[in-house]
Image 1 (spheres, rainbow, N blue to C red):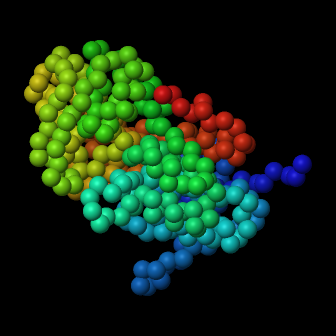
Image 2 (image 1 turned 135 degrees about the vertical axis):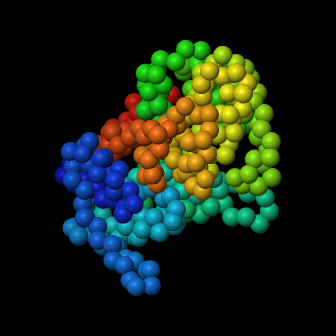
Image 3 (image 1 turned 180 degrees about the vertical axis):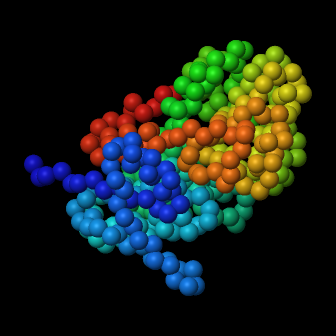
Length: 312
């Protein structure tokens, strides 16, 4: 049997804060990647150590700007050209995931385009978490390990010890996720039905279900401008809820999101560190996914099952 390929872990520039935590959890040091910038904004990537014959893990979330995605693509290409044995892209937040279908004429399917670019660049495997749409896994012709932050959030929800708990979905599209949490925690579920005339603008919202006298936790895969989240929280409090908290895996938090959250009826918002916060907020608590990804990297490297990573 040939000797096992050595493991090497590298990080993109904007996800180094998380990659360092993952390295600490696994007891491994990150390899060095040199990012060379030109005066016109162009950049190039170069590994500062050999990766020949190595099992290479590249950690980079692809949140805006698109430089983060392109940096990951260039690291994959550099590793492939340097004769890496296998190249695994660890993408805690998979950007462009909201573009998973043609919802109107003459639009691109951005998530499929990103999947094609990653595959063409030479990636062998994808490890990601809480995709906006599960079917994005099918956009790849390579293995995709789709992790769920429920393994972090469920123990935390139980730790809160809330009585009369209700799980809520902020829209109809999130009912499957909310229903899974509700069944696992043995709680009722409510749904927020909203109507949008365009992206990030809510024209109307209604709460389907009973929230009076309940402690509500709203679940979502991401929070962007926080318009839906804060409007739902305020409506639930008006309808008699005792408290409203929210859980969102990916804290995109663009535009007026921070101000909306801080001025809303939300008690707290729990997020992961898949995307770095732009600033701290008294209402936002960050739970780290470093151990989850560290364990998964070890299992993938050692050809072990990752099914134990899933709580629900």
